[in-house]
Image: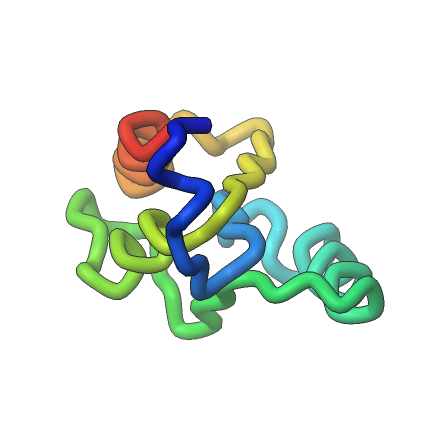
Amino acid sequence: MSSSSSSHQWKHDVFVSFRGKDLRNNFISHLFRGLDQAGIYYFSDNDREDTGEEIPCKLLRAIRHSRFALIVFSANYADSKWCLNELVEILECR
């Protein structure tokens, strides 16, 4: 983590990157419930469809303003250009 990040004001504790088709209605819903119970503020985009290649600005902002990123790999994660673009953005922010 860079020294400038210590003075950064984070909007979210964690940004969770996942393939919605694979995980949204099972593992991710349990993960989000657990984060809620632990008092961890996470970015959630319930209207998200990962069918396109471009990442909407709100997701880019959420990635940039999250203290941590959690990438949940699934069998089809790498089949999604959206997920791969998110991953690139996450890596560029760290």
